[in-house]
Length: 399
Ligand SMILES: Cc1ncc(COP(=O)(O)O)c(C=O)c1O
Image (cartoon, rainbow, N blue to C red; front, side, top):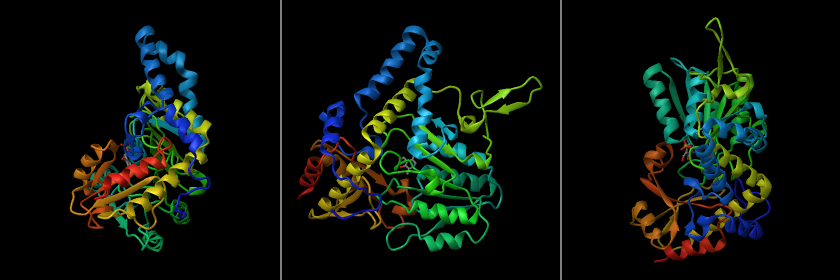
């Protein structure tokens, strides 16, 4: 197996994978190869969510929240441990997009402020930037890619010779298995004194992250993908040295004083809203605790090894073209079947009990449109997947 960016030593972990399968009800239902969409949660995650909903129904939402508080509060330390950051710099949200919007809103970008973005930028982030350009005259600069498909670091360096207000990159995009050189991006941004917003939505839970080593100042992520948490959970990490204020604080993020002034909550909690799904947060806690217990490095190694196996196996199937760039790694693999729209390939594979998804160019135009790809099929693996799932995928695609 060739080493790939993001791969970590350890390889396929049969024992850990078998344990994950036996504690994941969905693993018996189909070959789920869509962790990059939403992964299968474990029984513990499911029980945490449903258990709390039952408790709310029995004793009331406020009373249930109080009973669960030590557990919900543990989410911050678990996220911080995974990101290598401090507990107080973590905020919990509903999605990566909500986190992104709160972070970017707090930057108060104005006329002429330049945002330097990589081609890996996600659709919703780009749309947010387009609206900021329309309303506030923000300038968007998209840096090109090098021969590996990763951001052209020399181009990024050149782009940052002019003043910029923000650098942003997706660690792993929605549209391929590319792993951006985020530590290098972070170093360049830091050298230029520009905040770096890292979109770790597709990497948190599948690749090692360390906010200090990566040099990012803002990080957003989601629960439902590689963290195996419920849908409707997201996270935000904020470097306190930025001194950011939320655009619209609520009662969770600030205190209303007698004189009609308000005092922001210390730390990143100022970016949260008071109302949220406590049951989902408890599911997130259960998922994070399971990841920690399994050993994140073992999980990352299993995912990266299976991803590598899939990339190699699919490349050998006649009529299938793996369209990941050379700088791909980790557990996401993209491909097309010659002469067949990706959505049809997804439907055909569904008939074989294989769950993959298709990604249209409109979800990542700076990547897919620039590479002339109207859409791709995306397969993505997690701990509950096995080499057998990859064999089944390649067999189903054989002409
Ligand atoms: C790279 C990337 N960033 C951001 C998002 C948005 O995440 P969410 O749906 O949690 O807002 C996605 C979703 O697929 C993504 O792939």
